[in-house]
Length: 219
Image 1 (cartoon, one colour):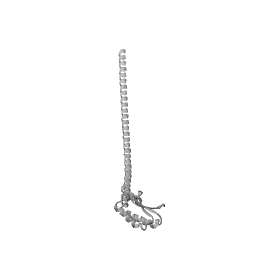
Image 2 (tube, rainbow, N blue to C red):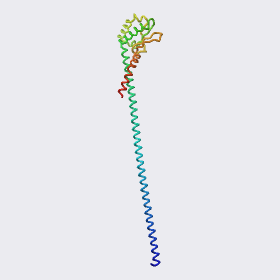
Image 3 (tube, one colour):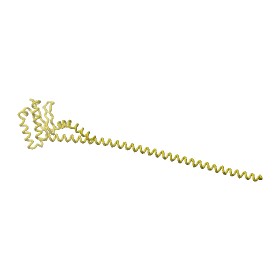
Image 4 (cartoon, rainbow, N blue to C red):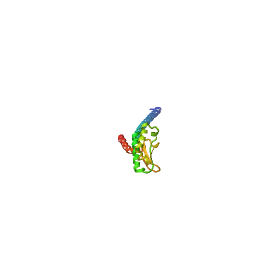
């Protein structure tokens, strides 16, 4: 092989080697780029999955918290509604008792008997030689019918000899709406059979029992 041929062959080999090395380098670089891209894509996918899982977990936790809060709110609302309903029922019951007592103690025959009882007991135990007043609802005087006028006359006659003579006087009063109340003049002594007093006595007995029934019914 002549010297020019040798030189030509060496140049060709150098070119081939540079070419091969360049191709390999490009392949290696491309492989690295592809590998890095795959790794980055994998990280992005993993991060996205993690974020999605965290968001899902937080959403589930938020839903559970909201559900718990809703249930608690409903429980409190139900309790408050029950208490309000129970209170309303008790108030209505109390009002009914008071109205019933007032109606009953405003009837002529009932009021007459109460006056006779008060006058008789007061005369025997408390009045003696003292002055006393029996308070009756003023509306019995203002809106009195012929029947009630006769009732007062008959009642007065019934105990006038034993009681009115001793200083017992019937006085219409706005202090009572039903029933009657007797008090000694000038002294701190009173027998109260007014509708308010009788209602209070009845409610002290009835309300605890009625409240217990409502509580047991609500359980």
